[in-house]
Image (cartoon, one colour):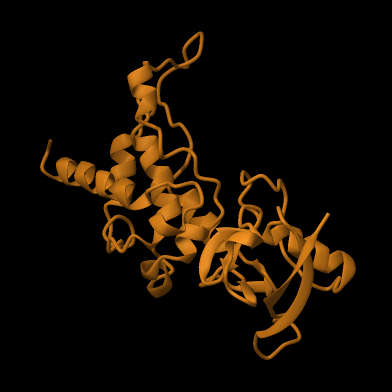
Length: 238
């Protein structure tokens, strides 16, 4: 099969050994269908086994391979080389997150914020004999809020998160929206009280970076606006 040589400029940084990040250039013979993840795997196999990056499913489901490609947060398993016009193509770790090594970032803060919103069903009564049912209309309300793959692209792109790491961030707030909307959940009031805070709903400034960055086409800004309306309704006794 015919190949096409492409140049890649990849961020390299080991905080245990390097004073600052640097870029390293590679030339790779790419097949027509290759993604950036194919390229990274090829570099490790044939040129430089020291290059570090995350990957898992290779199908845009797990979120592990999110990184900044030509200035945009993308899943490297979905970013086709033939769709990227720059030469060289720049590959960097997700911004605003500490680098562990090269393209691998520390996602601890994101997962801690996610855990704070209690992203699971909360009920108070005795469980039913069978499953907790929803109508098709109730189930449809969850569309657009449950599909998050926790890749970190939205939170990494959020200027409010850059400024204040205490901010829950778009990924956590989208998850909170999913459970506030769930007809089976019985902790709506407690959830809204927690979210109605300076580092919760009101730290978002509606910049929409999270919407542009999401590889799944989700809209955290819209979810946050919906939560704000619910929180204000609670304050007014509605």
